[in-house]
Image (cartoon, rainbow, N blue to C red; front, top):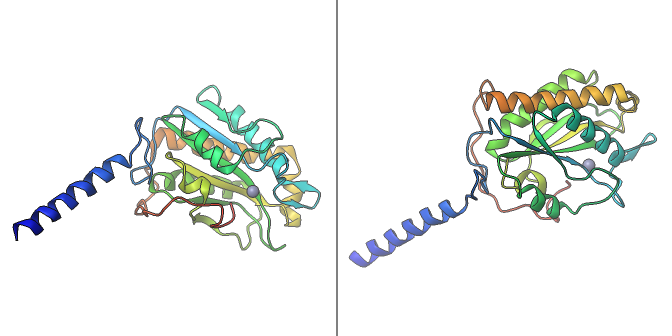
Length: 238
Ligand SMILES: [Zn+2]
């Protein structure tokens, strides 16, 4: 059956070609099926929500304002050691798919999206979301550092692998950080203070610096890649 062999051979070649073309230039990767980043030069800081999208509102706190405040503090911590790109630097909305497109313009970069959480009153503590293998160690470092800062943790999900538009779709290492629950009385009281938000920002910035210096070292086995299609608006909350 030489014809069958030829067909199988062609299939194999096209498979290999499609794997190659799933990689962008400048070290980018569609699926993130590679080790985590090291010695990166650019950090894209995404303050969640903005403008008409206030995000969570609870206990007199507004997520979009807190996210921007922490994002600016992260920028201050990182610059000038890194080039810092702010997805938004004031109160306006950027569509999620646009955030992805903007992030994809920057080579040798990572994306960190900053949010605050909303849920049952007893829930407290940080959560960090990742999807790609190349984003796991960064997510774990951020979650560890935030956990060390947060005095209240209860019923939170911790480090979570979830396919969101900002954890799956950018072609660069990307994570989404929920810095704490606005719905929890104790945590909300802390989040309302600038000194606590500064500590949150320091924790995130230290994780980013450590990732750039050490790569995945010390972060244990990296989870296998999952070859899933891009996340759409209809998928899950993000
Ligand atoms: Zn949010």
